[in-house]
Image 1 (tube, helix red, strand yellow):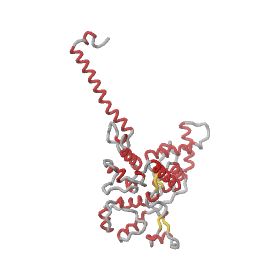
Image 2 (cartoon, one colour):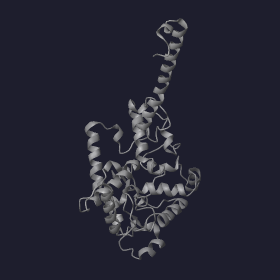
Image 3 (cartoon, rainbow, N blue to C red):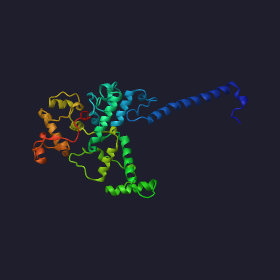
Image 4 (tube, rainbow, N blue to C red):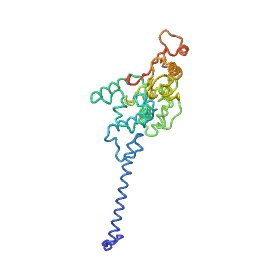
Length: 335
């Protein structure tokens, strides 16, 4: 039996009440559409546009927005100076967010390897050349990017590697436990309870997280190197001397104005200071370069010229006569 009898529904006042109920319900349904669309959009967002709360994301129809979103995905979990070492950035850019509201950045600033102007077959050729370069470049000198994607990929790599060595008809948790037992025996480390808890937080900074660090001939290190080899070239970039140099300058605590005053130079920002392959002429600039070579450049990547002799002691007596090797001075030159 209806709450409102059929006879009662014919009155003007009751029809008004029913109409008001329908209107309220309709408005309530409409108000739920917006948060639903925002939720769907947020599910496809990353650090670039997560806080924008757009019903229709701009990157869907805007190629430049997609490009900037891609760059954030690629570099965001790495220091900004790694990003800056690959691009000629304006002096006022000091963080990833500085290019969010800029227009025409693809043509004006974010140009790497010259690919932004290339089309079709040219772009395919450039990509193939870069892929060939990265395959012959030692994985020990490669930086893994796309951390949000590469970390799960690392766990899957280890899981597949050790699952393949499990014998017997095991499944699920038993299979995983047996694989973890094999890995613990291989590495000589404690046993993990799940592959999901394994990270390469130290290894991903190889080989430059400590000046005098030398890779140990251990299973864990070889697992990481094999994982890096398995990644597509587009997920990696070479270590560059410019990246390490920018890190050193930023750690010095000096502003670009202070550096320019001491060096007699006119650089617009720290990110525009190139890495000198030879000792600078200016005395103060030369002193910083020498300190960088002595204290910050990994000793395992230093080689004295033929006939110098003297080993490491000679390095500290005459540090400006060394030859730096093992990584590219600039990623654009390497590629």
